[in-house]
Amino acid sequence: MRIKGLIYWIIGVAAILNSCSLADDAGDQLPEYDFAFIELFDEATLDWQGGFSDYPDSLKDALNFQIERKELSNVFSADNHVLMLSARNPHGDLFYYIAKKFTDLEPSTSYQLSFSYEILIEDVDQSVDSVDTELYLKAGAITKEPETQLSFDSGNNLGSNFVLNADKGENQIDGTDRIYFIRKVTDPIYSTKPVIISGETSPGQVTVSTDINGNFWVIFGVDSKSKAELSFSFNTMVVFFKKVG
Image 1 (cartoon, rainbow, N blue to C red):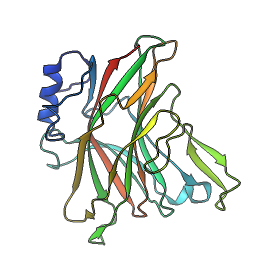
Image 2 (image 1 turned 135 degrees about the vertical axis):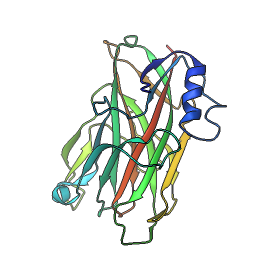
Image 3 (image 1 turned 180 degrees about the horizontal axis):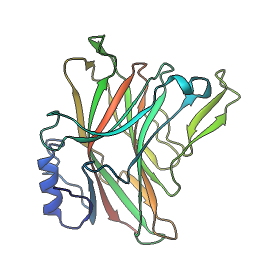
């Protein structure tokens, strides 16, 4: 069953969270909110888009960027549709992100956002038994469309870099453009055992104001310091909204 859109009843959100096997307590400790958006990634045409940033121009053609919507086989306990992002990361500083534009909200109005998420992490290179990880999950919202753009940093000996058009911060440091650190992940990735991480952000951790048309973009991403070629498959994403002004 397709479930997508703005859901206004807490009982409906709780049922979906429980059925999708998010964090164990997600159904019991929902953040206070006015409505929520639930994405199961089960359609070929979706509003969410994927992207990569924070890589040298000199490496662009060697990073093997892959963005794919597909259905996995018995990985998750319920729905197995995912939006998968995969790339090489030899420089150890790649940002994998997904983003969605929310429209028709109240113009020039502030909202607090909370997120529930479920992500499969895999090592693309199956010739090794395991790899260590150092991953920093980030979430936020901005009024402009997230894009990767070329920027020259005179202090970087690698020359020009592709960076996000919003400051996301580094590691555990929050970005200045309402993109926040939410979790560090250091679980080793084994070739024979999938690693699934799930959880919720702190209620109201992200605050954003809509533009004059009632729009903004949500960003959720992984800042990877691991040099392994990893893939991140987003299985379920829930965004909670609370109007605050």
